[in-house]
Length: 250
Image 1 (cartoon, rainbow, N blue to C red):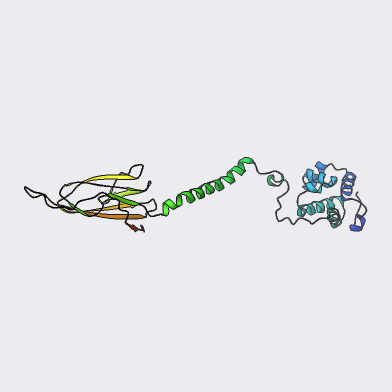
Image 2 (cartoon, rainbow, N blue to C red; image 1 turned 45 degrees about the vertical axis):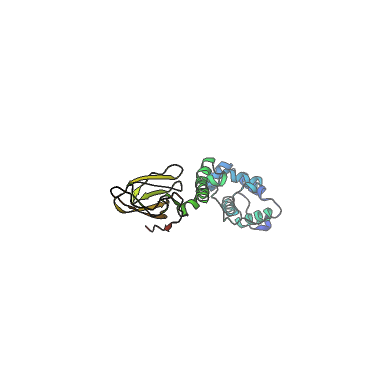
């Protein structure tokens, strides 16, 4: 039967590791057998007997280990705990960031594939942020709509008529609610046949986020009288960047 240690004064002249080892040997127990009896991992029992406090789990668990060993050795658990604190000397860990001893996370670092899985969202977020920084201005800006021809409202006596101009690349264009093909450089050209009288053309350039720029052109087609030509207003080619920005609230 092991020694009965009743308090801290009985332990003051010996080191904790020596007491733990001698008591185990007096009981005739191996580390493996003691581990089975107490439920304490054998490696931690070995660290306690070798004084390897740097290898031990947080002090919350160490205190529990010492109390279990005290029961097996018939010694005072509080005395063992006081000796441990005296020998350690520094601030005891609170256990706020403790992991259960023997768990994978307390003994090993996170595996590379797990780090990659957790870091993937951060990479995606960073890429999205960069995209927004460089492309966002293009999404929230009003679209550009330049009508090169006709420059302004006019009267003509030729029913064949072409509307042309340019918009920003990536924006879409409709004329009288009909989609118009836009080239890679943002230019467009659409041919129409005018009806006699007033013809109105509503051009709408639209961004991906639904912002619109609208321009309206009115063309009056007048038939030429027999034997002569009706006076018409000349249509000069130019650039009209004056337009109205309309927010799409849909």
